[in-house]
Image (tube, rainbow, N blue to C red; front, side):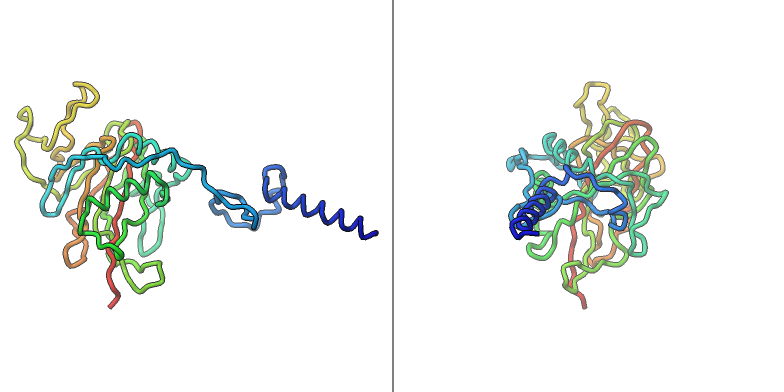
Length: 305
């Protein structure tokens, strides 16, 4: 074959490969060719090439640095705080859009391994910390915690969205680990979840309260002389929704109803780093509808002895 022909064939092959790399959708290959490839999330750009830079679509989200919220002290020991409007409607929309394709059946960590369980029947979605809306909310949560978080040492951890449908629940559990986990940054540090934020994003449901059976709270005068109810009242959807935000549960403790944008914050650990069993809680079953919420679990690190 003449060298000119070989050169043309080589050039054509290189061009075809370039098109395949750049526009993989133009080529439909048999699935059997990829049967040995394990499943993994697709990157933003299917395959990196030296003359292309993978870029994310620019986000239209702008973090509102002037966003304000209001707090109510629920319990001093353990510390539990109710936060009104921690997350704005714009942030909620952005968070839900980011999480939607990521939802999968929820798991729990037991004996150091993730596993499915009938105690938790919701769906969950991990959120990327570099997403603008996620970073905005995490910064706000970190500022809320003040000096509890040590700069350059502790971090906010990867956040998670959780979604409950009718009949779904999360039986009583705690967020802290019985034994602190090893850091994954190559150091010999360990960490545990020093505190928790549970922020509701979607409250289109009935039922689905978050129940803390071992927290009694600070007793306040009951509105309308209904002794079973404590806490604030809210009227955002009309007079028919004029109900307290939390109540005394018939089996003990406090039960918080889901309200979009609002959050519960609590401290998980005693000063010595052990878990506080009084912070055990449950996601009660939904009667109908959907509840979506955001879990933020700030991590406190410890040097390994």
